Length: 213
View 1 (spheres, one colour):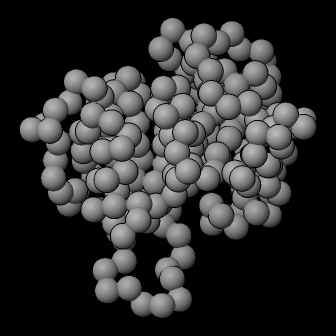
View 2 (cartoon, rainbow, N blue to C red):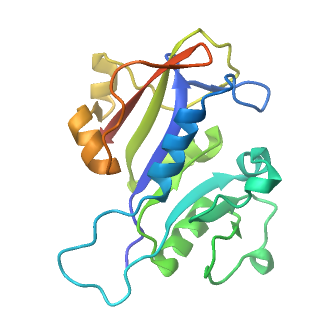
């Protein structure tokens, strides 16, 4: 069985900033965080042909710093198989099976994909940080970015998503295109709030980009 395609899910500013000093530049986006939780938990519709053992979980793949940034009371992220990548992990530290939500600890993205293949998950989401995003974008399995575009204010960032996704020809030339809201709704399985949203003085909107090369 092939590993599932990868969907990167990220909140980023207009200049693709995603962090500052190891934390998120913004706070108080409870509705945005709830969207993240719903989308990464929700299983896709079952295939038309019956499967003897349909996948029971989606997976979230993250680096160690992203894992450490999750408050301990929320570790692991519930209802999802958690896979944590760190070069400090050795083969003896990896879990060979994933009967629960993890975390499964691996030392590379390649090993994470191998585990996904063995675990037979439904969907796989890459949730950060920048280095893991960059490694994922190098793989043909990376097919989609679910982007929360932070519109204002202009947050100062020192960490950036390694792909420019703008409304210009450069994005199209890079092999990525923005999909319609209807296509976003269909893929995530809900009617996503359209247009600019605002929480705690921060404006943002939900987008979906897909690779077309």
